[in-house]
Length: 266
Image (cartoon, rainbow, N blue to C red):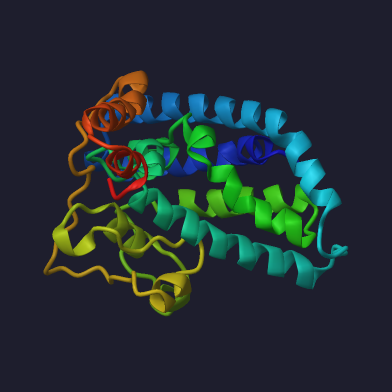
């Protein structure tokens, strides 16, 4: 089952949660911002669907060369979920450290608002940025293609719920899982919060690899993207960073400098 279909099936739950959050915490919302994020989500889903269709032959070819024949059991599904979450951590971390990938991911960070509709704010350029490359190891290992993209969808669906200012602290859950508290830090542009908390579902990866930062009342979270202007127009929001990156590459002298402009730290 395609990621887009799974997320579409879950959309009634998403909409109910958004309606509740908007009704009880309207101050965290801007209608124009939420509409912009929703339009970006629709464009993103369309590009993902097109990319999956075009890349399916590659996934099928890779699966023919799989290392193992993995049967579907509770243990293998759980293992696929954990391994995908591990790969998601590195995809997310790379998206903040490689300009080519940041050009797509920055759209998600560009809103000064932090609410459930912020989760919708995604770029239709993710396929070009190479998000799909990070799921290929699962297919090569031998996890069925359908299972691979099922756990991708479940991971992304989980992350919808961490985009909120309503839920403050979840006690013991904070030690193991990504939570709204952890993800607020990730979206914050405070100096101490930059490039922290890349987790999808399990926060343990950040703790293992030195990128964890707990939320603190001493350092208030402020949202947006450093150096990226806030755009309500979905097309402008998507293209601004790509234009900036290409212009930077064009001005760079020497092949190495041009590569750095495209693939160095943004």
